[in-house]
Image (tube, rainbow, N blue to C red; front, side, top):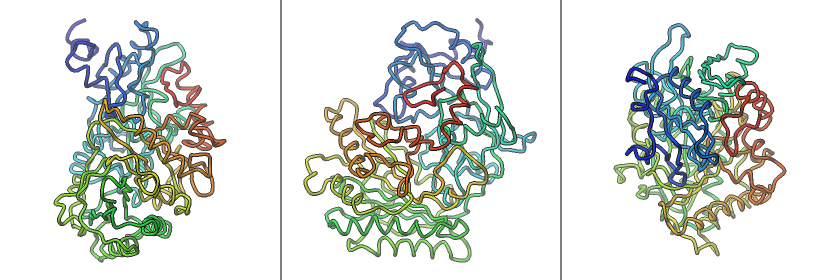
Amino acid sequence: MNASDPLNPAAAVVRPGDKRYPALSRGFNQRWIAEPEYVRLVRSPEEARAALGRAVREEPADPRRTRITVRSGGHCYEDFVCGDDVRVILDVSPMCAISYDAELAAHRVEAGATNWHVYSHLYPLYGVALPGGSCYSVGLGGHITGGGFGLLSRRDGLTVDYLYAVEVAVVREDGEAELVVATRDDDGDLGDLFWAHTGGGGGNFGVITRFWFRDLPEPPERVLLTGLAWEWDDFAREDFADLVTAFGEYFRDRQDPATAAGGLFAMLKLTHVSNGQIGLLAQVELDDDGAGEEAMAEFLAAVDGRIRPESGPMFAPMGEHAALAPAASAALPRVMPWLTATQALNASGENRCGKYKSAYLRRPFDRDQIDAMWAYLGNEEFTSYENKEALIQIDSYGSAINRPPFDTAVRQRDSIMKMQYQVYWTRHDPDEPAHIAWLRETYRATFAATGGVPVVGDRTDGCYVSYPDADLSDPEWNASAQSWATLYYKDAYERLRRVKRRWDPLNVFRHHQSVEP
């Protein structure tokens, strides 16, 4: 094999002993470190196809390690990419080109690009943006296929609402790999393959190499960005109840994306009391008629003005977001160009160990849910556990998200809030079991009335597939009658299974919660 070979091992393969191997055999979440036979970095769609085909034909050196996984940004929360049973990791991060495809009349983005790479290249070049997440290093290969949402989503919808085509390297029944392009206009099997990538999750059907997007929105020229915090010491139970109720009622009542308030996005960070502060981040478009300023003032009055504790600057890091700098002025709404504000919020946190859970809410919290969160965040008898990096994050949701332009595999389209339970610790921390136990017990207590999980029902609407949680498969932590598949996919799951049978008949792409053929 010579240097011109696109699969030249010297150029593309990282094996044990290579100084790059420790970094490339793990992801953002340091809980999961794999020991694959090799990591192959692929640099083009054709190379992805060839690498996949070769990996499928190879015999495992260790029969305990048989899985072939795909890495884009490396942000998978569970061991679906970097697990003990992984033999090969196909890393598509070198594929990050962005261009305009005149033939398809669509913006083309390779699957290895990250959120920040797209924001900092697509917008300056073309004046448009994906309404994606605030965490800069998340790769599009996973972000898009889970639905993808962020600070512009209440204004503009989910990222998949603009997806027009996807290119995937798949494995046929005869074991050969091929590249397939599926578009929104396709019918039959190709149409199903496209649809599956509009919320069916990554790592289920093949190696995604490229996306095409049509009619992407123009982001605001300027935004108002606010970061403020309250001191935990100032809160009593009723103050906490007033805060989370006000937040939920505000977004319940503002679901029109044509209004400034309908496009306002906020994150309420209910940290553990040991953090010292509860945080709030909010962003709204600043327009010429003053509607954005009015919406921000109304929002702060409805939430901050409703409670007894007084707000001030955010000094403490909270989950995946650092305190907004300069802290002394962060509590005041600041006028910033959209890209500058996006960079200010550009965060993924440190690379550390973590455990996560999620929930969609169709209604504001009921009193039992509020009391459970209050208690488990370190109040009353639940005071033995301390961790500044434990929190419940509540994101605003709905508005344009709940008005999709076409059918997608994302089925949660009438929620008003989205929750992310988070806990972090450093590797080799002897208290790791306690951190995981806190998250599990807090989540179970919040949704105790429905078997410990946010079932698809009147008040809640399941879980977000891009915040995967292996506990949903465990009857100890999911005592409801709904499976993990129902909680993620609802009525879309049976169609996703048909897509799986057609496009991954050998079940090459599998993990603990992959779509079952």
